[in-house]
Image (cartoon, rainbow, N blue to C red):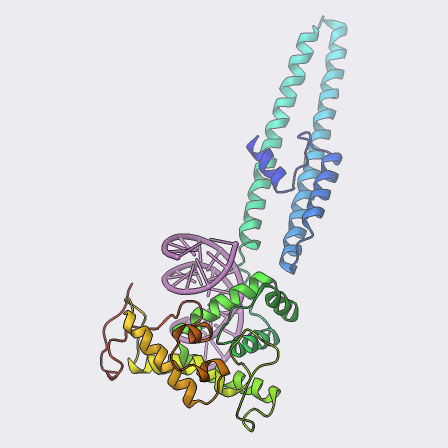
Length: 325
DNA sequence: TCGAATGATTCTAG
DNA sequence: CTAGAATCATTCGA
């Protein structure tokens, strides 16, 4: 009966355990209901599942038919025999039940193999990692553009995610995955992403046009919450900051805890950078020392200061073995 | 064929 | 529930 439940759950078997065309229709309806899901892989999966279901039901029907035929055949034989010898109804009943039991065991095997087929199908199709496809170039461009133009706060809102998802023709959760991966990988190795960052920053700078000439404000008109996102300067707000901190320590790996004093150093650095870089934002420029104010636009969630910087003046000499494995 | 890149999943912490 | 981190599994380029 567990098999029945499983097949039912998979939409292979109908609600009636007897099977037959009524069950097939019900199963088809159930599968259709699930079909509201998106993605082409699912449709592929469903197609295969339908195939399995069809095979299952045709086989089931065949068995049922054979069972009935055989039963009537036996009944006829018994009837013929009843002319020569007396046959009790009990005997007939016993005969029929034996036949049914035999056939139901065959059905059991059918169900089992169907279950196996479904399981294999599931593992092959529903495991997304097996079916991973890289996003197309345009989608990656769009995502990167958003990421680097919101480098100070790369956490798109739900609406922004939906927007991006629509633009890239991917799902919202894929957008979330992408940003999750991007944030962590960017943070882990800013150096590697510098070129990319510059590229996208430059691109957005071009699209924003004439930033350098004015020299007073570089506010992005589209994003009120981000602390400046138009020019190539603001990219250095966060990106270069991490770079500089990281380069102080040479090649570093985030390992131990970061001291509290480091945070203030980072904040100071941030100020220096934002000031030497000129006007990043009126907020940062006007306030001389307010870590909170800066924190909101530079440190992402929780000011993830990379690596264990013991002393900012220390050169890239301290190569400690990391390998936390 | 190997290693880097990358999308997805899983686990943990807040 | 979400973000971060680690890891897995696949893809892609040299």
